[in-house]
Length: 338
Image (cartoon, rainbow, N blue to C red; front, side):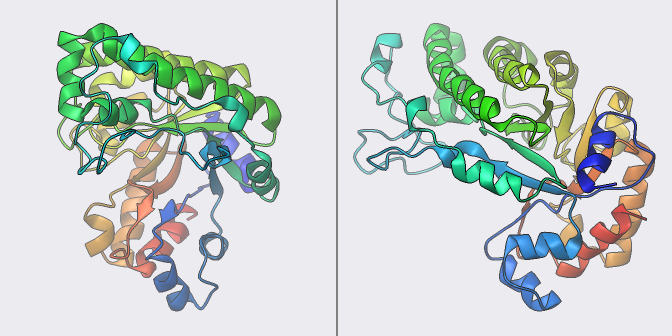
């Protein structure tokens, strides 16, 4: 059985109990540390091969190739000095209506070329591929308006928020349509994400989530479903209050189940194990940093006993930072298959 077949069985709730794992995305600074520890080439692929990783992630956003080198979305467009911080206001901070959005150089699908991404996917047909446009519309609206302003405008100018969201999601829907039409059956999972939660709760109320976020999430999911893909949604933080909404919207797989966020422990999520498969679950905020390899193995066994067999073991955040010992990642990989 290949990794792809094994993980597909997990995602389709017909696993025989054989374990699977995804390393995640080792940070650029982490790669040489692990390579030195294990005596391998300093590359992500070498790390994945060393750990016998069952999955690969290829985000199709890299296919956007504007002839003038423009990014897909420039949230500081026309602003002198750009945006100073992540939460700073963007170029639409003072917009009042949809007319104020018209002059912006919106991305065009004609500049998408997925040739290189398809070629990478073709190299790993024995693995479970996560792919598609990242579709981070929630973050982009926050960047365009400024995060605090975004949440205020949901109440004071909902028409503007809806118009801006629609412009962004229109592109992502059309881009995914083009990508998955060309992809065919070379991958099984549409993977996209927005961080809807803080450590304690959602950024916005469930009611505002259902009004301003869920409809666009459903539009994106519909493309994946059209092409018979499993839908894997990424969201950091505490999102337990809208998990039933996400299930109803068509989400099949939840990632990364941030274990230390409120309501997101394995025990909290086991009520959904008949409706969802999971990727993640092993705390990367502190446990991966401070635990011993043996403790890592014990935690993997514990989480799998609660959420298994429909789980691909992985850190609770895909970005593996240099403070995570190589021995702990190796312990996770080993324990996931025990």
